[in-house]
Image (cartoon, rainbow, N blue to C red; front, side, top):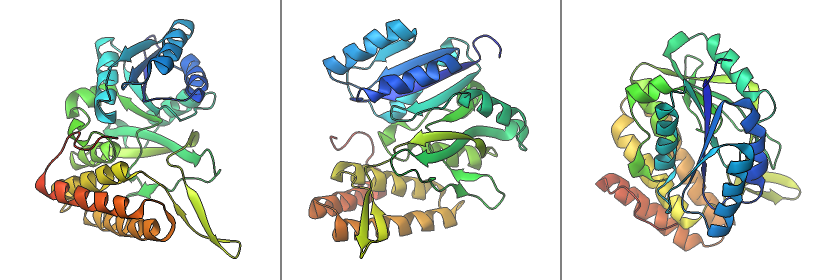
Length: 292
């Protein structure tokens, strides 16, 4: 692999000690690693500072929670300024197995879309439940949307098609970028040979007589606000182009509301924040409007 080929970008926010294992797993696979911290405590920053010296990576301290989109943009722009060709983006709780990056690179070089493939993502496995996370396929076999974590992207795409949408703050940032790329003629592709262990939410299984009825995610009221607000924003921009996707997204949101009422705590506050999110999405009230 050529010099300064792949830079990994990891955004952290009050990470637990397991983040060090995740960083140690990815560091030998890439030529560069930049960790962008969004206002973690001094104790957790000291842990990252020491790791940066030991593992030889760059730590950028934002001092405040600027949001996942801003964190990714800062990291990718750093990689861009250092002349890296590729960025591989990871959440702090994602664990990359050995040879993950090499597998992704080979898959990109041989993918059926050629240089029209803007983003390549792995197959995701829930690290707690051991279940595959469902992929969201388009009619042509590529992906409609995908998570950012574990994704591989040429830096040139970022330069040409723009930054992640910082007005989202958190949630939907990855989906918006996928929809934007697809609307401009690019594709989002899946590498089934590369597997990433990922912990997307604090799921609870709801059972009846020993049989599982459904999973509920237990997102906070504030996260519910951002998820619904940003979905409405995306719908206003992309609905006419991707109506089936947004019909599915609305159905999923309604199901989530029902699951909250049936099985989650803090029901009234969560549903209230979902309604606030819908309102602000319709009004275009974006940015960091609710404290996490």
